[in-house]
Image 1 (cartoon, rainbow, N blue to C red):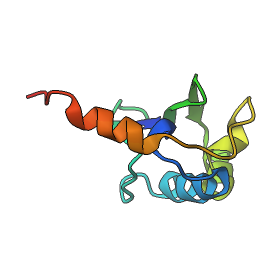
Image 2 (cartoon, rainbow, N blue to C red):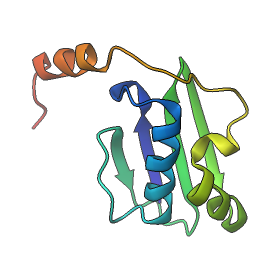
Image 3 (cartoon, rainbow, N blue to C red):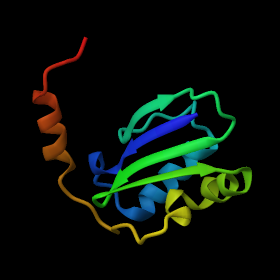
Length: 104
């Protein structure tokens, strides 16, 4: 399973994001989050996280050990950079998205 996350769509602080992402990683098919852009069945038994955050794209394929760690600590425990602690601007991004034409 591949999950595409855009953290720029949420102004939650990093500690909240840690708890939120940990819950999602524990149960990806049973959680709905505003930052989840897409969930793709790629035929893999591994969970792949593709995340846009802090002007970066972070992609990681989680082994069972990494998934266990991330299900407690959140995605940033596996990141190779220090993510921003506080975020702003999500409301403006959502407003811009609402003006885009719908795809059918």
